[in-house]
Length: 309
Image (cartoon, rainbow, N blue to C red; front, side, top):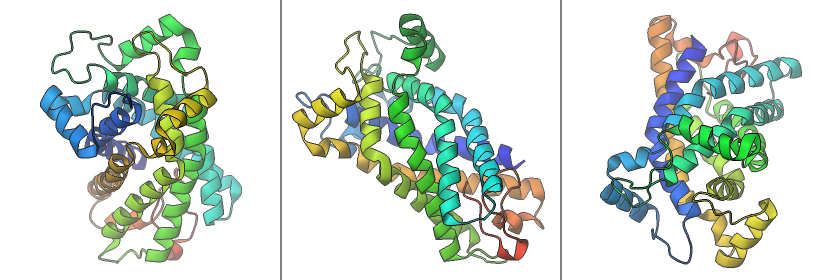
């Protein structure tokens, strides 16, 4: 039931956060010589005006499809790693989160490749006249036919570099915050504390790896239209810095941080509600305890901390 609740909560997070992600990707990969957008707000405004509200949700099928598998991998690996490490410490939370982040890249990288390609499709057009991909699955199938397994895994190295420390920072910061805030079963402010800790942990995680995400997005968007601009990660970094300076590594950061907090808030709120209905009102306060399969904390009931969903 905890896994099911996590999946539902994650879906809510995707629905809330995907428009911000679309803006982030558009800002990260736009041509600096002929920029379409002046900033986060202008990008939002332009997409809605030119492509309708649905333009903000381009590519949402891919993260929705990969959600169940990613949650299963992340929480399963993180929980098992914590049990192997034994002691529930912030350092072990970081190590377990890093292990989970590294392994889930197998699903995350192709999913984000399809998402990025779909988000870039029909930029500035309400009805795209050149629609390369029908949906996320069609996108991956076409890439596979044209470039093989290597093409489907484009950006895998940068995804690995981003996700491994990113998940480590997320679980570590969430653990530190929940310990600092305290979370007792009868605490009337338990849910707001969970939401705050989750939101801030998400922001900390993105800040720690955002420059890598910019390069990942550019590499995964490269080749749309049949023209490849970058030959490697180093070449992408070199060209990006030469043309735009080091400020390139902050492109889309505002929309990303705006997205991070509400996504985690939506996820935690949904997970809490699902578990309350599933367990019943009397068991609802036990939300402060870690789900067994996630293994995010191993304290006794009197020492329980909230799980870092």
